[in-house]
Image (tube, rainbow, N blue to C red; front, side, top):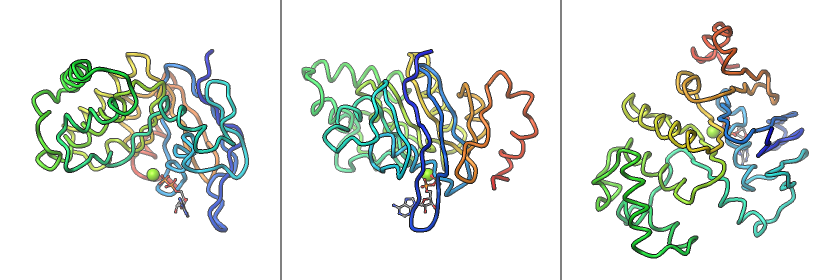
Length: 243
Ligand SMILES: Nc1ncnc2c1ncn2[C@@H]1O[C@H](COP(=O)(O)OP(=O)(O)O)[C@@H](O)[C@H]1O
Ligand SMILES: [Mg+2]
């Protein structure tokens, strides 16, 4: 098995609050790992640590076999090109059109020519059902469309791994479905991902395995093929009964 990301004995506290007590898991190439846990259980901090925005107190993080735990800002630059963090909101530049928002990372991080950039953007918008919106400003899009454009921008450089931080939070069923389709599409192309979500149906739909974060530990990891036998637990979590 090809392990792309690995977390070993991750521990992190803020003040006196021990958020992560001992977190270990591996992310295999090509899989989607769901990460479910109550609000404040440390899901975002864990994802942010993987791209160097937080430092573990103890434990190690490996990306493609390399220990990145003690990387400095500069060393994290190439890592962040390969690991995309898609956060809540996805913050687009308000004063730039959809096209300019998408062109920004391409102009700054690739050698592509303007015609190549244009083709890439139009193809991506087409693929994600966003064609025809390129000239619009984010403010003239619905919240759901903004999130979809934000997701498109996060992945436009073709990352190896995508960390989705509650990508469907606050979305209506239509846009939730669209985001789910985007995630599925990227997965089919071979992208590896971690999906943090409160939305059990989305996790169930998209993920190969689901890890449950509880009281600073990974309480349980369920394989998709076993999910159907875990109806009780799924029901409990889907009802928001996450301790
Ligand atoms: N920079 C910070 N300073 C202090 N406490 C923080 C900081 N970041 C996160 N926390 C705390 O760590 C806990 C986990 O946060 P987070 O990872 O954002 O949770 P969630 O699972 O909801 O994403 C929360 O109790 C939060 O208040
Ligand atoms: Mg969070």
